[in-house]
Length: 327
Image (cartoon, rainbow, N blue to C red; front, side, top):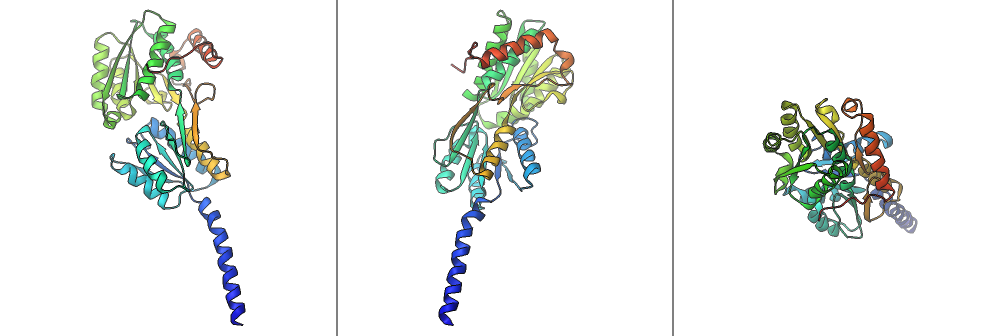
């Protein structure tokens, strides 16, 4: 009898042990948002749209963490991984160093980072050819300007943001070779992405210098830019999410970066077992970037202008137009 009891216990333990990897694999996905939070109507909110699509289709729960300061990044990632997340998705380039540390501590956990490249065997990096989408909105800005002066307001002064500027300038000059492009960056830290007061100041300065269209790539700092542009009855261009609805009649278009698609695909691939580490680069060809055209901005863009921009889009995809990145 004693031997039989021991045998039954051992078999039970073996069955439980074999089930543990499956249970761990089925853990909830987790997302760590960048500064500004998921309701910034821009970068983070696009990620949240991907989360919503995933939960509506699967019924799964997604753990979410919104950082309040830079020091919370590493600990936030660590806590999500420690709780058995099936995949941890970090939104924003500022998470590159923290994820490099935490991913080594949890080698069996999948990590995806948006907008930066981390070369580790359990990390997937999703990057966007933002310069390609910016080229198209640069064309729209130039073809819509009445003064031949257009502007750009960036958030944190980093290569990622200057890539937007490079594409925007190239597209504007492709459409109107003699166009002038004024540019300004909000700051040199991540706080530059949530400073609408400074954004408004920079926009008013450019408007005073003759600018009548401003492309703002600055997170929630955009709110200050948009308000200044609306007050001056000029035109603005949004970024990351479709921001056309925020100020109808003012937002000419939005340079859309499909972070929602990247987040959704990362979660689904972790769920169905097809997730892979390494770099993924999404441009116009992959429908990873583009510009928004809907009922809010349709009256602002003539059909002939739309046709020219779409023709350039096709030429970029075909490799006939090479869009420059930051020098």
